[in-house]
Length: 315
Image 1 (cartoon, rainbow, N blue to C red):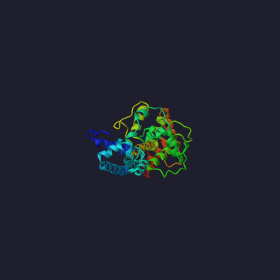
Image 2 (tube, rainbow, N blue to C red):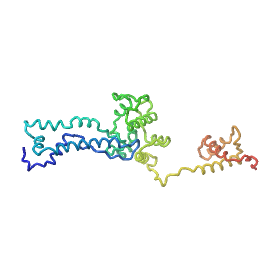
Image 3 (spheres, rainbow, N blue to C red):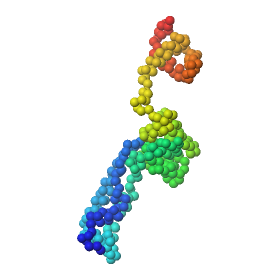
Image 4 (cartoon, rainbow, N blue to C red):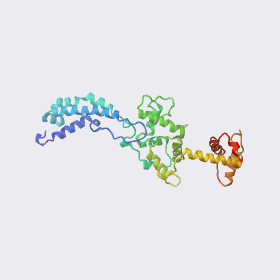
């Protein structure tokens, strides 16, 4: 053995601790970034408390050993096997049990800093699989949750990559996985209902997201709109058209209805009126396309504001 005067015993204790604990030695509570879906670091925090207790116990045990004992454990002769065996058996079962309970990276939600999607790379694609869109919509790198894993989870038995079944009970899974699989069902029913491997195209996804108010990662949506909108640009918030005010719509509808009544003889109380169709044809003559339903919709809105004596006021 080397002379004790040349040994850094603090470093030796760290080496012994690292070799004993393995992954538990370097594990730490991950950084969680804002993303889509449930987010709760409680599992990580609880696990860290148990890990820290174990590390403290092993560290105290090493500090209680003499320098000679440390050297024997590290690189002693064969006749000192008993000393090394004592160290190997110390907290052995506790370490094994804890290693089996290391929380998966998504345990606290899908905002794990090590698994954030490379949005710019993926957003430039012209199509994706449903599984890729599933991951990207929650901000996760698709390679972090491979298609095979998603299919096995969705199949419910964890054994085969079969088609997902709507009858599978996911209640035994963690909240993040339940969220993931429910979202997967929504995306499949919209983009690949027969599980034929259909692709998801950017414009179809954007239109659907906006129509049903599907929550998706804002950076993924921003880049998709940037790369796949007609002019290749996305309007900034300051230049985007504001949502029409209901009062403004009501006023316009009232004016529209008033003109239809006074200029075309429209009667809102009639069961059937040819006037909406005439207005549609009139608009078509100057190149404006509008449906009968749209015309009736705004005539009905405007008619709600007519006073009871409106007919007596017509000249």
